[in-house]
Image 1: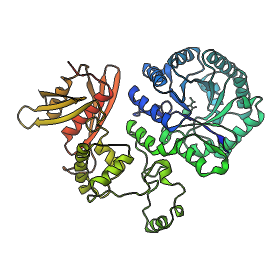
Image 2: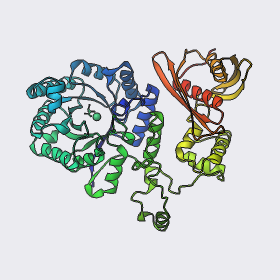
Image 3: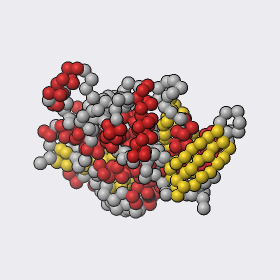
Image 4: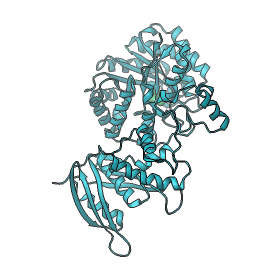
Length: 503
Ligand code: KIV
Ligand code: ZN
């Protein structure tokens, strides 16, 4: 019987700090629900004092998700803790994550303080947070570069003050695995009352050792790991959830396991990558496109005789279909549909026909149609997803030297509405027509059209950022017809903004 490792996911806090990866509240709720289904124990939902958007996301996630503990980050500052407690008010299980820097760089250079004063502030913050919640986690920022003896004094003091979890971050990704493991071991052996709290790893990947350090921490007594999906995070990222989970599954001798439903890992990885616009490197462990692809003849031969010759993980265990069907221009609708279902899309016949047509055009110009090409073909768009509220039914544009004009039919649920408009180009005309059908003022703040391959018969990927007051949403689509792709991306974005139909 293995011991439990608590999985603390910080995709929505440390992961979301990456420039260009910001999500709106609706998207964050989508990610949080996926993390809940995956079985993570704690979701760090944000840093409420940092912005009204973060505050709102923590609040909305607290309402939307009930199984995991919802955690909010603070500095060791009373105002931060007040705001975090307020944001967490509606959470079923809640945790405040407070802390302060403990390395010489932080104590003297950043905080202009002294080691004793830092301990005083740490204890005060934990006691203050305890007034609001029972579950208080303390982070000893830059513990990776802190002196172990001093770190042990900090950890002992915060446990005495009531911390239920103590996080030992390697904030700069500096440690070597044996050093980080020894740090955790030192704390286990030298901190009085250490068994009253859980020690947590929080490793950054600056030297590519985040997963190795996390495992070293676990093997020396840590029982919570702070991770992100795809290892997303500032600079070189955080420890990746999937790597830790699958290493523990592969190495049962470690005697520690998580409650993660690994079959949902691939789906979660793709969802986070799409929503955050952060592609996963092809050779990324567990979730990379090539993680289970065997290209050399010798390996293919070996795997066909016995999977274990070149595979340590059954791809099905992480939600990847074992039989990798190469999609080519000769593939039929059934093969395409099968692949799309694995990617989490269930299309109706009419929709499949549309995607299939796009697929054939792409397959003609590209030898190897990959999953991310398919995702762009489906476009994750409101126009294709049959569960989307607003969908594009019909689009006709007149362009050229005359006044560009667009006629559209948009479905709001089952209701079809037609509109016509002119514009300075066909996209402007179509978007203006749609804007005339909705109550909210929306503005396009970013608009990018990119060719997947090259050539004028290419598929264009569209990415659009749309604003409604303070709210932001991103829309995506892809099509050989870039006007249509642009309109679909716009509809995708306004669906995410939950706009309403004009009466
Ligand atoms: O890396 C780090 O030290 C952090 C803390 C704020 C927990 O992210
Ligand atoms: Zn961090």
